[in-house]
Amino acid sequence: MSQNIKVIPRHGSSFKDKLYLPAIYDGVKVTFKHLFKNLNDSNAVDTLEYPEEQPTDITSRYRGLHRLTHRPDASIACVACFMCATACPADCIFIEATARKDGHDEKMPKTFFIDTLECVFCGYCVEACPCDAIRMDTGIFSLTGNNREDFVLGKEQLLANKGAFGEEICSARN
Amino acid sequence: MSTSAIVIAIISFALGALLALLTIPVLVWLERRVAGLVQDRLGPNRTNIGGFRLGGVVQSFADVVKLLLKEEYYPSHIKSGKWLFMLAPIITFAAALLAFMAIPFADSMIIDGESLRISALPIDFGVFWYMAISAIGVLGVIFGGWLSHNKYSLLGAARASSMVVSYELPLGLSILAFIITYDTVDFNAMVAWQSGTFFGFLPSWGILVQPLAAIILIVSLFAETNRNPFTVAEGESEIVAGFMTEYTAMKFAMYFMGEYVAMNTASAVIITMIFGGYQIPWVSTEMLLENFSTFAVSLMVVVPIIVTILIRWMRKNNTVRPTVSTDGGRDFETKVLTIVMIGMTLLVEAILIYLAFLTDSALANNIAITLFQIVVFVVKLMMFNIFFILIRWTVPRFRYDQVQKLGWYYLLPLALLNIFITAIVVVGVNL
Image (tube, rainbow over all chains, first blue to last red):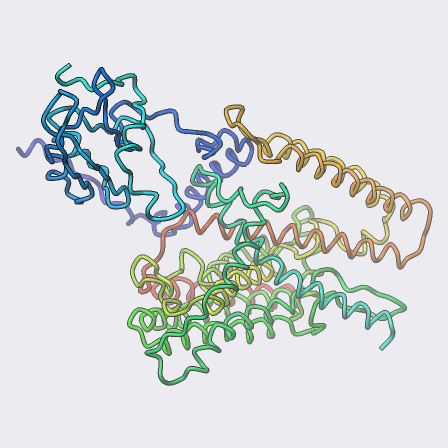
C-alpha cells in the first residue's frame, strides 16, 4: 500500500510564488492568448449561431419530444395500459381509456395528454411502455408556444410527431 | 476671462462628462465581450438597430432601457434611514464621477499667452482632489450595506471597511512617492515631467522611473475600485451580492455604473501618473508644436494604415460561418461602416494637408495637437480598461484577511521603503 502513495509537493512557499506577480503574468498570458486568438478570427470560436445554425450532434438516443407510434396499418399502437402514466415521476401524462373497435386490442386511449411543462424528459415512460407505443426519438429539443395550453400535447399532436431516426413504425407485435 | 477661455472650459467640461459617462455602456459591453472571448465564446453580438450591431455595443443601451423600466422595488423591512439607503449608491457614483474630473485630457492650450487647461476641473492640485474625492466612494458602499438591514449586506459593508484600512495607506504612500519624484501635485505637470527621456533612451514614464511605487499604485487602485481580485465586498460566491443585495433597478444600476466609472477613473489616474498620460512616448507637446509638419505628415501615413487594418479586421470578423443560413445584415453593416471609415480618413487627411501645407496659423496647429492628444488619451484609457477587465477574468479573488495581510505586511512596508529611497535619490540629485 505504501508504495501507492504519491506525495504532491505543496506549492506557494517559494519566493517566486509569494511575489504573486509572476503567477499573474502567467495567467494574463493565457487569457490574453485566448483573447487575441478569438479576436483575430471570431468565426473560429466554437459556438453555435443558434437559431440560424441548428445542432448537428443529436444522436438516436437523445431524449427529445415525445411521440406516439403507429402500427403497420397506421392505427395507434397505444393500448391505454397506463404504465407510462404510472412510471412518470412528474405526473405529467393524462390518459383516458376507451373500448377499441378496430379489431386489434380491447383498449385504446380516448385522450392522451402530456404536459411538457411538467415533463422532466427522464424517458421512464418509454422504458415502461410494453407496446413500444411512446417514444422520444423525434429529435425535437425546443418546443415553443404562446400560452401554457400550447405545451399540453394531445393525442393527435403526439401521433403527428415523426421519428427522426428512421424507425417510423412501432416495433412490438407486428 | 476671455471668450476662448470660456469656450475651452465648456468644451473640456463636456468632454470630461462624456468621457466618464459615455464609457459606461462601452465598458459594460467591453467587459462582456472580453470575458466571452477569453473564455472561447462570443458574448453579446445579436442586439441591433436596423442591422447595425457595432459589435454588440447596442446591447448596453438595451440594458439601460431595461434597468430604467424595471419596477422600483423598495424593501419594506427597511424602516430607518431610508433616505441614506437611497443616497448610498449616488455617493459611490458621484465620488467616482467627480474624481475623474481632475484628469487632464490634453496639454494646456496657450491662446494669447493664456494657459488653458483641458480638464473638466481646471485645478492645479488634481492629485489631492482625486485622493480626497475617490476615498468617499467607499462610504456609499458602507452606508448601503449597513442600511440594507441584511446579514449579507452587513458582511459586505464590513468587508468594504476592512478593505479601506488595507489599501488606503499604500495608495497614499505610493502617490506620495510620485509627488516627490515629479515635485508637483498637478496631474498636467506630472504628464509634462513624463514627456522627457530617462537614461537618454527610455521614455521617463512613472512605471520606469518608479516601478515599485507603480506596482503598489496599480494594486491599490484595483482594490479601491472593488475590481477582481479584490471584489471581497461583493463576494458573489459567498455573500450573495454583498452590499448590493437589497438594491434593485436604477438603485442597483447606480452601484453598477459607479463601479465602471471608478474603473475608468482608476485607469485614467494610472495612465496619467505612470504611463505618460496623453503623450505618446519620447514626444513632448513642444516638440509636436515645433515640428508640426513632420507630425502631420507622419499622422497622414499612420492613420490610413490603422484604418486599413481595422477595415480588414472588420471584413474578416463581421461575418458568419458559411453553415449559417443568414448573416442578419452584417454584410450591409460592413459596407456602410467601411464607407464611413474611409470618408472620415479622407476628411482627416484633408484637414492635415490643410494644416501642414496651406496655413501656418498657430492656433489651428494647437487645436489639432490637442485633439490628437485627446485621442491618444482615450486609446490609452481603453487599453488600460481592457487590462482591468483581463485581470478580472484571470485572477481569482483574495480572501479579505489576505487583502489586509497584503496591504499591511507587504505593500505598506514596501511603499515606506520606496519613499525613503525616493527621498534620498531626489535630495542627492538636487544637491
